[in-house]
Amino acid sequence: MTDVLLEIKNASKIYQLEGVTVNALLDISLTIKKGEFVSIMGPSGSGKSTLMHLIGALDTPTKGEVFIEGKNIANLNETELALIRNQKIGFVFQQFNLLSKTSALHNVEIPLLYAGIEGEEARQKQAREMLVKVGLGERLKNHPNQLSGGQQQRVAIARALVNKPTILLADEPTGNLDSKTGKEIMALFKELHCEGNTIIIVTHELEVAKQAKRIIFIKDGQLVDKL
Figure 1 (cartoon, one colour):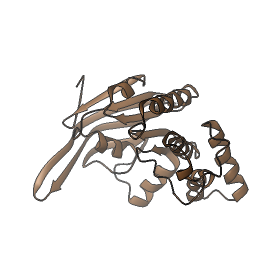
Figure 2 (cartoon, helix red, strand yellow):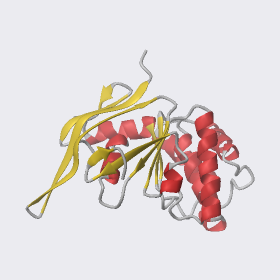
Figure 3 (spheres, helix red, strand yellow):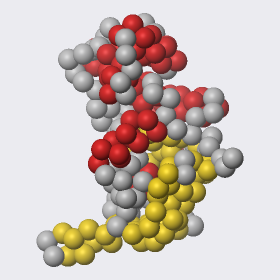
Figure 4 (cartoon, rainbow, N blue to C red):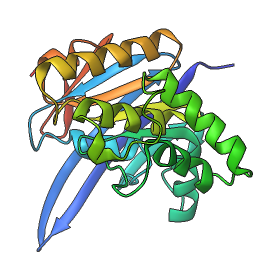
């Protein structure tokens, strides 16, 4: 049985913008194995966000193939991609993307609703366990405006983990945090990695990228040895 979770083969992403051809990604091949902690680093406009979208099944390549646990997602329709995102990918964003008028517990519970998990008590039990895991067991009823930036990001991480995803995918997870809080969040990612989670972090910050076990550099839509 293979331990390869993600495999990208000769993938390119080409956009047509107002008659201009934009080569966002050019013939990229990449493999990530189960249990890896990887960072993808590149400057603005390098193609790292486009690559993240392919990894997270938010988009499909113009050419090439993308396999998640051996399943080629390159030709799936939007409904099929949404199922992959719900079952296989846990997303953590720079902006937290929490629902402002609901509690931390309910924010974490939402992916379970989308996954069709029946029984409010069962869903809340799972959500509560994840909030305890990220150190927010005493903040279950707090709304986002009652939480610090670091606490909001912990809620977002708990939400990303609650469906037990194959890959935890974080886009600039410390971008809206001060340096001290950012280090605390990266320490949490390290803990999660030690527990066996496969983590991919997209960042433009070298200090954040260096926390991972492997750094993948991207520039001008291509993988490079260094920036």
